[in-house]
Length: 235
Image (cartoon, rainbow, N blue to C red; front, side):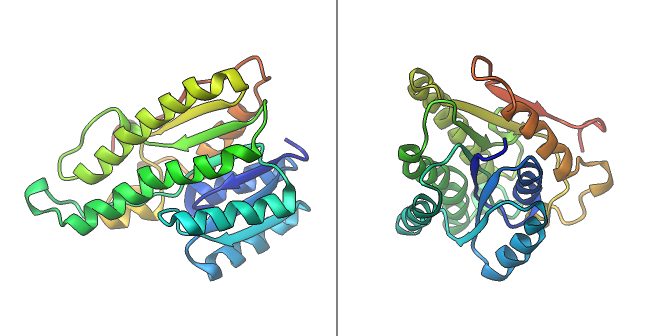
């Protein structure tokens, strides 16, 4: 990974930051994005210890213009992207469809699905053969959970987008991986289950290690779906 450039959305905390650490430790330059400048600056300071180039960029992946500006900044500094990690994601309060506000639905769909589309579309011109896109989906992309309609719908849609991208980009030598995660100990649980048993969840570091191993595969090999459910079983 040394000398490569990775873009990680939602890279200022949680799984995104863990992946940024893992890639930077391998010698990869990283662009980390998020909506809070102070969080990004703090994370960039942490990543500086790896002696790689770290570029923090404030970006709301729901905003087409903000995404375009972020990718333009990455192009100006690095001229290319070798890895794109679509990690930015949110959840909504645990509510049945009958009580789910439209605004909550839109926020999750726009971030988890449309954001992945916007970032990928903008980043593709900077990617060449040998590049990899990793979309952080969740096991919710293949199953359903009551009271989580917006989240489940977004993840199901993102899986469809991921499969379509894989077919479109296969001839160009760009790999597309669906990252299918079970329960990971991050702040997203506060959105819908504040009392979730965090002690039984995977750590973001475990996820990051698996992602880096998948990225290390030679160009003639890949994984379509990287499924990590953890050792503790269902939460």
